[in-house]
Amino acid sequence: METTQATGVLNDLIEINNDRVAGFEKAIADIKDENIDLKEIFQGYAEQSRKNGQELAALVGDAGEVETGNSVSGTLHRAWIDVKSLFGGSDRESILSEAERGEDAIKKAYQDALSNEDLGADAIAVVQNQAQEINAAHDRIKALRDISK
Image (cartoon, rainbow, N blue to C red):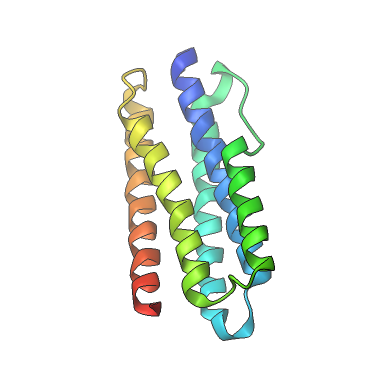
């Protein structure tokens, strides 16, 4: 069972994973045929965050209420995607730049969580594993963005 502080940290990670799913689903819906390869990549990352959220929720367990919503910053992030699409930001580089920006946010959230001393050994192991996957996703999106320039 996690402490109240650790539960809050894990719930924050659940929220940002929910944001990531919603962000990628929004991007998938807006992607045009010329960037169809990005749909498969983004679907994989959305599924990764669904799995992450489930693993984190299992850690929270009975220690507290599991967050099922999205964070305020994530909602603002998705709104920015909507505004950008209205002004022609649907080219490959723009899509990937925005995806990288979202990956920067979740990468930082995992770094912050790992620096929290209240997490137990089980939580640290899960969060470290997820952080490695998040970092790999970030690096892949960044590489694709760099190629698209």
